[in-house]
Length: 157
Image (cartoon, rainbow, N blue to C red; front, side, top):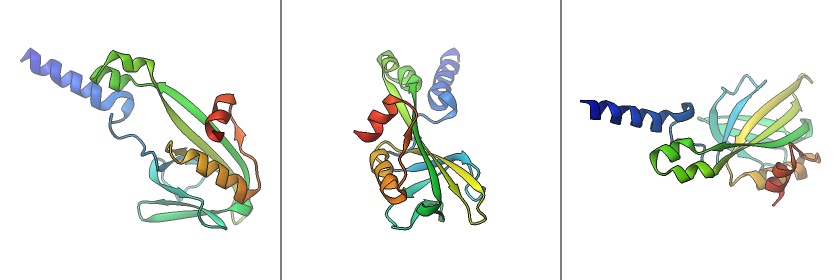
């Protein structure tokens, strides 16, 4: 009985560490709306952030889409947050504590149809960062502000 309780506790820690399922991270080609002033998008919505349209940035999630005209974008900021891989360290090996996982955040400032300032914060999958930042700079004519030198190196290389 004690063995079962210990096993259940270990599995609970592994699956729910930091409030997230260990294997349910953001896909490398996805984006997630973290928050902001865009009430049409529920916080935590995962989908695709696309710069393919010549006139609008499009976020498609759960059968819905929100468009932000490039001409209305007035601020772009990129930053990272690094965290330890605690769940992997507990589940697999303590050596994972020495590796970091990076979360990539893009903040977009823009004016809406009523000329009110709005902001949207997206977490980007690692495979979309460089293309998204370069495309936004080209389409909006605005330079991305980088949170720090590490973010600058990650976003441009």
